[in-house]
Image (cartoon, rainbow, N blue to C red; front, side, top):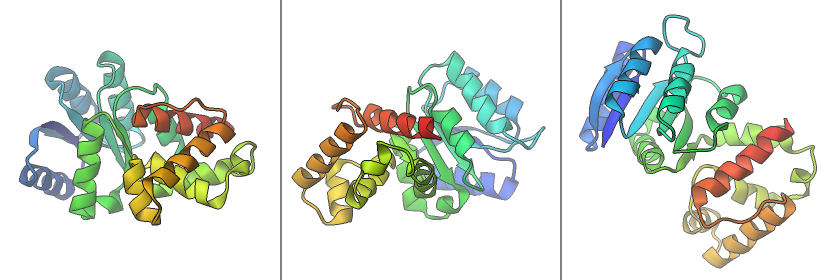
Length: 216
């Protein structure tokens, strides 16, 4: 699986490259600036991009904007964004087009190799890997607005795990529920949010998150 990595801190870039290589990924480019990232993505067309939000030369959202520009040229290009802090605007921008695998992780998560690698694989496969803290903030921002406010506490727990890209089986294991019980909660969530159920987990979660971000 081919990866383009963008991170301006050398030690972190080198560490992430070594970690990905050790888990069977082929890091075809490891760059440190926004322009280098965009060029690499358009030229190499990797299976997934792992991108720090803040890159030179502006050190604002150069990495994210380069990734979004590449997705406009290569629709559905899987992108996993890394950020130091929860930035709801960045999460919304990443989810805006609703196509391809997407992920948003806080940098603290990359120190857990299993969690990080799982997120990269999930995004590369067209799925979603949203940081729990990001989802919690999106939900908190939406909690005062109907119909989100109609969700029970258990349904909100299920929704948070759905938004992380977890399957019904994985959600059940986490919450000590049967898979059928999770399915019932999921159906209830869609009913309360006026969203049509889908057999595609990624599209389902994208629809839920798109709904939540409209509430803010």
